[in-house]
Image 1 (cartoon, rainbow, N blue to C red):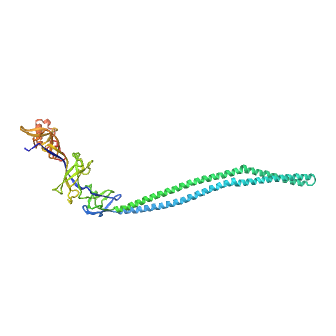
Image 2 (cartoon, one colour; image 1 turned 120 degrees about the horizontal axis):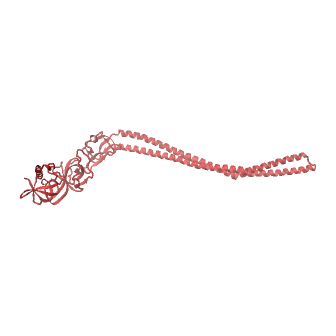
Image 3 (cartoon, one colour; image 1 turned 180 degrees about the vertical axis):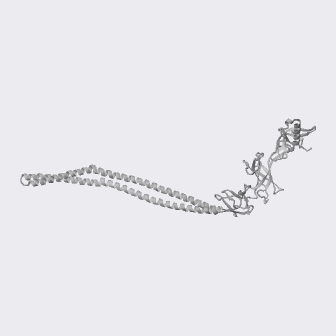
Length: 482
């Protein structure tokens, strides 16, 4: 019978898993061709390249065609800009001429108004007043001549025919005076008012025409300016697009930004169409390859969801790289993902979290490569003076943890309270004392007890039997349930 003794000592709690090596200072190169492109050539993966070496080249036929089409668009836009600039210059000249013409019409209308009111009217008024005064004098003279002739006829010094001549002259002069007075009245009361009103209206209309012309020409000029600005912006955009396309020609040649070994980006390893190879179509900003620093490596592993809560950033770890079988390396946890990894298939719904561990004492020139595997043991905590027994000594039965203790009277079934544990030892918090001997076949004994109970009481046969295998997973430090 195999037995073990409950003993006190230091219990080291760890999480162990396997992971892959990767460079912690890898230089990642992305596809910088806007809109993506097709790879024409690329050097084989694993090739050591120097800084500035050509690594890949994209096919440029489609890009060259796009550049040609864009050159035509830019030339058309530049032509429209030139035409818009000329139209703006013509419109400015036209606006200046139309405004000057309207301003001249206003000036002439004001001059006509002032000229009539202060010149032509006064001249005509004085002229007609003078004619009226002259007519009155001539009428007085004709009247005096008529009276004189009548006196001379009475005295016998003149003939009657002379009186008739004088009377006719007098009537003519009186008619002329009435006509001149009427003309003067018409001039003062009607002709002046009509002419002043007409000239004043013409001046106001010329003023309104000048305002309309200024606004109309300003709107037309603003329209021409906006069209010119729009044409300039369009030309600038087309030119920038052409320059951007020409710049893509330089991005079609991918060069190594540093020295290193070429590693293709291959996240979807199961998808042949996603592999980096000649003829593959890449999208903009898609990673193409990395140049890892082989002297600065780390391990990327996926920690099971049942123990990830124990892993914390900064915890120390030991590493055993398969390529260095006789050397134990040391590092620390630098990253524990907050979200579960989605990549990979066939995991049965199990959630795993990416965890990165550094390699602090990697020898120079160790020859390690990304993708190599390593066993990582993360130190969770150390329990001082812990009472422990082997994991095979504890099992679960009826919802309780039990051990089988050897006493003077035989083997005693005892309920215990367990604490933390690792893949070899379990901490006993209550139920055992230091020096107690326990059997290492707790699961077998519990199963046998259950079988005997079922034979005695078949009604309890439907209860699940205890598990046949003892716990050995590093991710489950407590004993597995029966």
